[in-house]
Length: 463
Image (cartoon, rainbow, N blue to C red; front, top):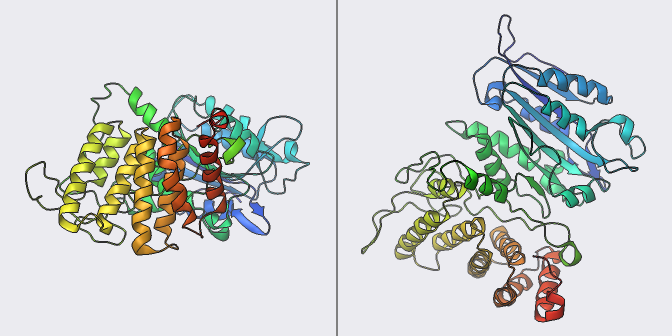
């Protein structure tokens, strides 16, 4: 299926182009891990100008059910040749050639034996984008790697070729073959794509592509081991390398009047957990800043706005999560930490240290610590938040499991043996108290703690 007609007109010199590609569905044990046709259909409902982030006339082409890679290549070349901005979306199953080490986007009808003839080589996509000479380009992928492709993705830790393309912003997620079907909404729109659409629809002003990626990845409920491109760490490194850093100030956000657009967690973490002991990928960090809404607001799910604090010290008015997000993404971790601590102090004075509001402040500080690379503090804060929530939410609460998962990921990143041993026992105790947690998480933590307690074994651990 292919259709156009968004912003179609004659006599326009500079036109944008949107190309939405639905590859082959990824299915495991009868469950649909990603339904690319559904994703493309949902994304096609978003106006092309909104996807492109500008008001120029644009064409939109959707490809679904295509079996010939040369047909896709032809459409791709037309899109890349557009003089205006370009938006390319690819969803489906990522596979690999049995003979070599090449990645492919599986098309309709692709089988293990026909990969080289019925799939789109990943290098074709990268090569066409590399040849683009004019106009900004955005690439968004929502893929599931099958058993043939997942080892390559894990080895490279990224999608090859996208990072070095001049003028191209590339974002997306790649989930593994063991991804629970729930993340793909049982054949519905997958979480990452759904969040892109939701954020575009609810924001009064279109967020930047980087902001959309951070918001989508932080809110999608991604499964353990999901590859996020670019990762939160990569975005922080970009911010640190930006001209004028650390004095560069990101787009101003009012502290007194928080932006009503939701600002979820700062994105899932990079760096897979060592395969030899812990499995193939990281545990996702939960969405600590999951929906500020207009200030003031109330629990559950949000932190109330603050009036003037009692006693001396700085005053935080309103909900500062949007500002915290801007500071953290801009690499200004010290300022973010100070603001978060002042905010937490006011919350504790007003609602009490064991209140839901105060615990959520602790979770936000944990996420800020993770972004700053302070994994010891992050693990300790997430563990404390998990125990606090366990007391008044119970073992089946998703927020308790999210806090435990965040603590586990951060703890696996602690390099110092003594610090890891200090934090580990309390975390393992929390995991043992949660029978609904993934048993692999508890096994991971117990194995690492045991190895850390045995010096000879801990030397072989790679954080």
